Image (cartoon, rainbow, N blue to C red; front, side, top):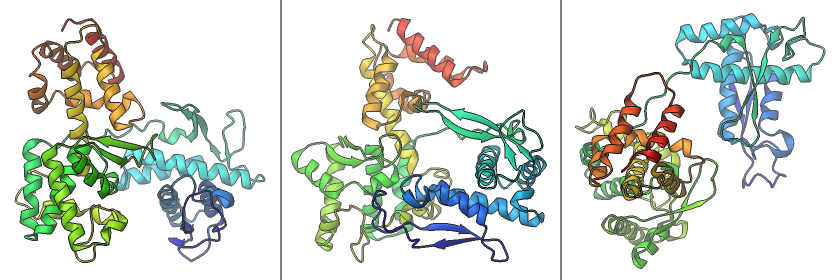
Length: 428
């Protein structure tokens, strides 16, 4: 079980940027005994006494706590302690997770690597035990782990531990990303009318969807766009500025986006209506507020709000699987497509590289590879309607489609290189 210390005595720290002390998860067994080894690792992982709450993020610490809690419960059921864990225990744990279908292969691999980090920490704190080693020539250790490094898009390779019990596990394929299409977008806007007749709630739903569609923001970034940025953009017929980036390599940066005048006007009208009803909302400068109090809506309010609205809609079947993030995919797919169109007459240029560079500048994606999936999405019929407006683009795009859809076993990276080579040499 997990207990939470809401105010650990770390309030003397000022370098983590938090106004209040951060919560500290603590692990206890089913009898209420404090799990010293697990809590020692968890506190160390969270930054230790001198920087707890700075990095990693608190939600990441809690995610590790949940993993360790699951492992602790497994050990208890098998009447084991952490010092009894062996290679065989890890194999049995993996088989248990597979049989229970409580996690997919990717999650099991992640959990085992976290457990190995716990065991390595415990070994360092208890040197008189032969619990874990990464030395292949060492003998008489209960667990034999292997060091590995992750260095994709990283200046300094990230070290982690792995184990033979997960070597044969294949990562679970992720669902291909998809953008919200025109008919789904229309159904999304109509869904709110089946949910409520309250005009303010209807307007708020429209405003949220419109900002998602025309800014490409994540949901948390969308609800933190300053209302004053919309007002200034409308009054000055300008870009919407000071859009926060709250995740990734460019976390803390600000974006600026051009929202079409018609949509910008509707958002502006909603904000001014909110301020007329709740004048004090000008001080917190938030767009999305409670209709009754005018106080900002919490991030948690938005977590499953869309699913509640969708379930009440006659379009629930059509909208199944659609979430806020599909709007982000729509935005960047269209952006990539439009840039390919614009650049299609530049026969001496690598269109793909230039188009992706423009999108990266807009999106603050960490690397071009993180945007590569949008090249595949540009083959969607709706996107083709845009691309085919450029007469010189179609032949190259058809060739790209052949590469994308081929089932010759080539990796995504190889296909991307083939596409890049094709665009460099193929006449447009």
